[in-house]
Length: 238
Image (cartoon, rainbow, N blue to C red):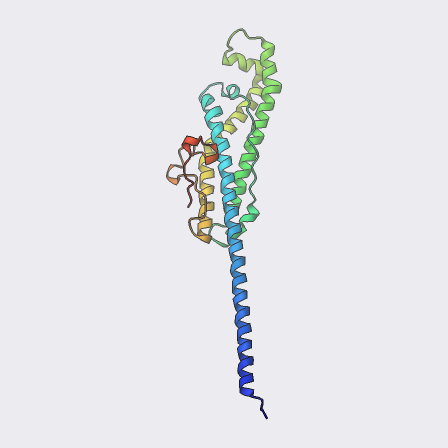
C-alpha cells in the first residue's frame, strides 16, 4: 500500500508557485521595458519632427533674406523696392508631443518653440499685408502718375502719400528685422531642444543641421532635400 508523500507534494507545489511568480515577474519586466522603449521612440521621433520643422522655418526665412531683403536692404526706397512676394508655407509644431521635456532642465523649450512659430506666423501675416497694400494702393497710385522713365524717390513718395509710405515702411522694416533675427533665434531654440532630448535619452538620436560655432552666420546649410545630387552628404546625427 503506497503512502502519500507530503514532502514531495510540498516541494512540487512550492516549485510551481515559485515558477509562476518568476514567470509573472519576467513578463512584467518585459512589458515594462517595451512600454519604456515605445515611449522613448515616440519622444525621439517627436523631437526630430520638431527639429525638422524648425529647419523648414529657417529655410523659408533665409531664402527671403537672400532673395528679397538683401537686394533692397540699403535702399532709401526700401519701402517700395521690397516688392510683394509669395507667403512662405505654414509650419506648426506639436509642442504637446514634447511633454517629456517638462521633467528635465529644459522645461521651457516647448514655450520657446511656440514663440518661434508665433513669430513665423507674424512674418507670414506681414508679408500678406505688404502684398495687399502694394497691389491695391501703391501700384495704382503710381500708375496714375504716368511717370516717364524711372521715377525719383520723392516722386514715389508724393504719389503714394505719407500715410501709405508710413505703412509700407513699417511693414518692410518688420520683415527685415524678423529675417535678420530669425537665424539666431531658431538655431538657439533648436540647440536647446536637442540638448533636452540628449538629457533624457543620450546623444546619437537627433538630427543635427546647424553648426553652433557658426550660428551667427546666415544662411545655414540646406537640408538634404534642398541640395543638388552633387552636394548630398551623409546625414549628421548628434
